[in-house]
Image 1 (tube, rainbow, N blue to C red):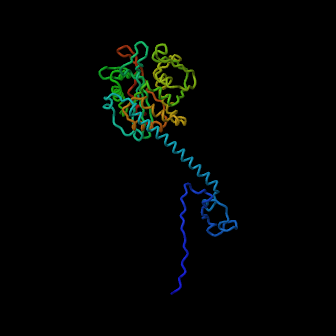
Image 2: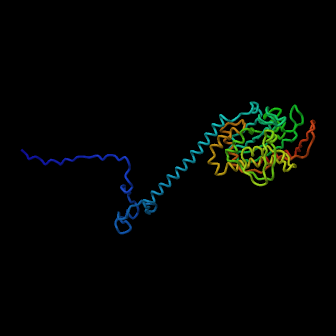
Image 3: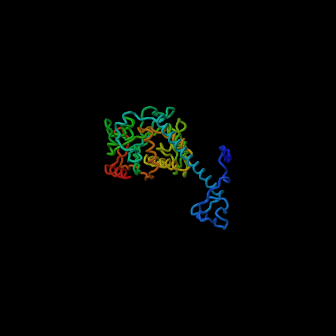
Length: 382
C-alpha cells in the first residue's frame, strides 16, 4: 500500500470586524506619488520611504498633515457659511411670497382693465404708477378729515425700471388736468372721483404714456416696513410740520433740525406727507415731491446696506402689506430686484409753466405741452 501523501497544512481564516470610526490619519499612510518617490529616492538619501509623513501637493511638494487638516477645516467652515447665507436668503424669499399671497391688498377690480401689458419687470422695461392717498386714519380728530373713500392722491410718481432702465418722474398734486365728466381739476382729484383706476386713465391720456402696473402706498402699514429696515437716513434743513392736525388733533407732529437724521417709520411717513413746512413757509408741493424721492433713495440705500442682510426676513414679511398692487408675489419680487439692482436716477419733478384759477376758486399749476413731451422723453430714455 502506497505511503500516505503528506497532507497540506490547514489554515483558519479570520475576518476583521468593521470599525465604527475611521482610522486616525496617522494609521492610514498616504502613498507618496511624488517624482522623487517614483525614482526610488526620497530626496534626502533615505530611500523612497525615508521622508516623514505628509501629503504630496502639486509638483511633488509635500504638504504637512497638520496643514492639510487646517485647510480641510477652513473649507468646511466656508461651506457652512455659504449654506447659512443661502438658507437665510431662501427663508426671506419664502416669507416674501407667503406675505404677498396672504397680507398684500389688491386694488379694485377695474384697475386691471386700464393697465397696459408688459413683460417681467426684471428683464423688460415697465412703467409703474406709485400713488399715496391723503385719507386720514379712522381715529383722526382733525376737523373735516376724510376717513373713508379713496381720498385724493398726495403722492404721484412714475417709476421706469427693468431691462436696464432707471427713471423717476414726480407729478405735483396741484397740477391742472382735464378729468372726464368733471372738467379742469387738480390731478389729485382723479383719485377721489374714481379711485386708482381713474388716476391711471387720466395720467395715461395726459402724458400719452403707457402704465403697466400700480403700486399704492398703504400708509397704515408703511411705518412697519421702515422699522423693519431699521430706519432710514435723511439730510435736509429744518422741518416742522403738523400731519393730520398734529398731536393735538390726533395726527403727528414732525420736528427735524438741519442736518442728517435717522428716521423711524412714523417720522418717514410724516416726511412723505409734509406739504407745509413751518420752518420754510415758501416751500410748496414741488419740495414735497423732492422729499419723497429722497426718501425713496434712502430706502433703497438702506435695503442694499450690509446690515439689512440680517433684517432681510423681517423686511420681506413687511414689504407686501405696505403696498396695494395688481402684482402678485413673483412679479413684485422681480420689480423690487430690478429697482435694487438698477442705478439711482436723478430726481425729476414735472415743472409747471404757470398757474391758473379753477372754477371753484382754487389755484393750480399748469404744465405746457412742450414740457410734458420733454419730461416723457427723458423718462422713457432713462
